Image (tube, rainbow, N blue to C red; front, top):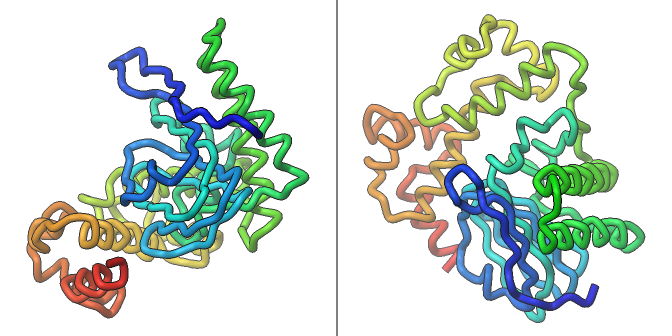
Length: 292
């Protein structure tokens, strides 16, 4: 693992010319010392050094072997000394984690689960396999051969499957729901719909309608797998975004309320306080002090 170049290898989205997939080798934390909130999926593997990761307002110690996973828009920052490693970014048009859930099953384990740590510590005996996959990705980015996109997707799938298995084995993580029945399909789609519509749809009934099922049936399959209600999951996603807006922006609370689909500031403030027992402005003030 001796590659130290800081240049980026990148391929473009052929439709609009935007970034599709890129790889960057980094030799310090200059890429991440400011709070990041990028519109891509991100995978970061530390090959040297140690430091501190701040992600969604939680701090984690990281070191050589730590692999980090961030969904689009998820805020994070890395501080530390002699931090080196590799970062891969990809747009959802290049590889959709939700679309490929059946093959990869990493959604909710590596990405898109605010209740799980965003990092996996790769064991030393597994590191050569992971590095070989990353090297294959890098070689393909450099050569741009026939069916480049398909080959990159294959390498990415294998990488995500391997790391998902490592995380499931290391942590008390519930394995992905089986894809052999209609209930699991509904769960996967329900989570996807929440991410797409949480700003304008706040009730379980609205999502049940999108899924073409009754509220009762939706409630049953969500409770059976997650031990929670659909409303709990919807509320959780709204509150996460509200917290991000309160910290990352200086928007007035009234504007945040409207952006999140509330009819007025009072309704939003009551909703927020009911969820976390703290008013939005008090939360904003306390968080800025903690992260100052």
